[in-house]
Length: 471
Ligand code: GDG
Image (cartoon, rainbow, N blue to C red):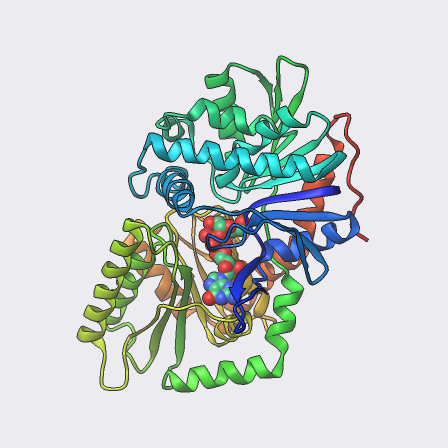
């Protein structure tokens, strides 16, 4: 039995087949595990999640001293719960309906079923009075299901993506069930205050509970708090990596391979329609076409990390972007000098750091993004206070990184101007902006995020005991 239970769609490791045919594990270190690992260690924690694949093995195991509880998923569940309801319905709905969400009853049924299994697993592993922290949009029903099974628990929920305004959320045929699912938690955390307000307003309008500021009063006497906890990164870890001579050498090597242009623009995103990749490449190409810089002066490196490739919308998007890159390079490129270097691949973390180090201008232009960690990671690696960040107003990160070149990604001319401004900026101007952004990112790192969420959860008045803060 565990005093702290993390429930997330994915485990922080991938299941792999070893050469002898047996099962092995490869850690996939992300921001979340870096944040949560220390709390898990000081609180006898366990992490429940899907290890990828369809293997039915659900035996508990440890990796790097962390206790992990795999949740198996059938091929049908992957299709209906994960690709369907989570990524074909909730993801677009919560991101401003950038593409049209699909509402299918069989997807919903699978979502309910998988959430129930997650809740049961958490109920079976949590010690009396334990703290359970449920993560993200795939598991919004877990808090209520778990509370029914285990009223003794202290339950927190954190949403990594935006929470939409009532006008959009209302479209969801199962809007009330989702709100009630979340209300099973004692504390519901969001990236931004606006999202928390959207939630409280919807609860008042749709479920009819009494609310006051960030609190919801339930008829059974319980109180639920909804508040913002903007997520961050392991800023020191990224800076240390950036200072590694190997990473520095690799950054130089990449620039040379690009033909040593004066300025390198960089985009790094999961290949997702929310990220605004198409519009940003168009804007860059137009600036180049208009003669503001040539292929000798500037190139754009776009890393598009493969994502959700089984979902139709993502296949269409990939084709569109690749057609555009081909057209731009055909129009503007010269022999040995494409205008856009497009990479459809994922990379080790060190290579990511080398990419950030070699880039003069990082371009992050999502139509809607909960936070966007890439923007913060870029800032963390610029320990010499050089480089510039072009950032969408619609990324959560824009609330904190006010000194970025902020853009509206729907406004191509505005984006072109921001690219030009960043390109033309003096070293002094760039350093002033970067210094301020670095201060923000270093002071508010991911450990501070996890600690503040868990401290707020510990303060909620329940009968359960609280987790200890990290050492
Ligand atoms: C969701 C929300 C919110 C990317 N490519 C590679 C790689 N990455 C890493 C980045 C970064 C992370 O993945 C991506 O995080 P983002 O925040 O940019 O975007 P989402 O994946 O959409 O994340 C988002 C986040 O959750 C956290 O709450 O900020 O708004 O949408 O850390 O570095 N890492 C490696 N190789 C890659 O090729 N190793």
